[in-house]
Amino acid sequence: AQSVTQLGSHVSVSEGALVLLRCNYSSSVPPYLFWYVQYPNQGLQLLLKYTSAATLVKGINGFEAEFKKSETSFHLTKPSAHMSDAAEYFCAVSVVRAGNMLTFGGGTRLMVKP
Amino acid sequence: DAGVTQSPTHLIKTRGQQVTLRCSPISGHKSVSWYQQVLGQGPQFIFQYYEKEERGRGNFPDRFSARQFPNYSSELNVNALLLGDSALYLCASSRGQGEFAETQYFGPGTRLLVL
Image (cartoon, rainbow over the protein chains, first blue to last red):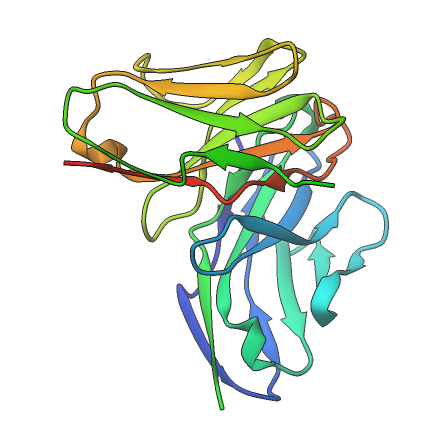
C-alpha cells in the first residue's frame, strides 16, 4: 500500500518569499506523484505531476517539484510567493496497479502575508 | 469545454436517511472516481468506475454504492447516513483507466451535512 505524509499542516510566508511545501511518500513500486491545489469552496486543481520522466517537474503558476527517490520526497517549491497562492495544497501518490486511485496526504494550508 | 459538474452543491440530511449525489464527467472521459473529503483532511478514495464497471473500491462500508451510466455520468449513493458521513464529496474524471497516471479532473464537490 502507498501513503503520503505532508509535513506541516500550516505554512506561512511573506509575499515574495520562497514557498516550500514538504511531501514524503511510501510505495513498494515506482510511484506517480501529484500536487493539487484547492481554493476555498472549490474542487482540486492539478499543479503538476511526476510520471518517471524528468525528476524536476514544472507546473502551473510558477510551481515546481523535484522527485528524490533516495529521500522518498516530492517537495513543492515556488521562488516568490504571491497573495493568490494562499490555498490548501495536497500531495498525492498513485501506482500502476491501483489504476486511478489517488492516495492523498493530509494537506498543507499556505498563508501569504503582505 | 465544460468541466466536471456535480449536483447538488449542498445537501442537508438527517441520520438514517439516504442520499444520491450526481456527477457528469468531461466530454470524452470514460472514467469517474469518487472521493470523500472530511473537513481538515485530504480526500479519500471511495470508488472508480470505467466503462460502467467498478474498477476500484476504497475502504468504505457497504452503505456506499455507485454506478456509472452509458453516457459515463455517475451516481454515488449512501444509505443509513451517519454523522460521520458529513463531508465534501468530490468527483473526478479522466479519459482512461489511469494506467499511465493520466490527469484526473475534479469537480467542485457536493457538501453533505448530516444532522
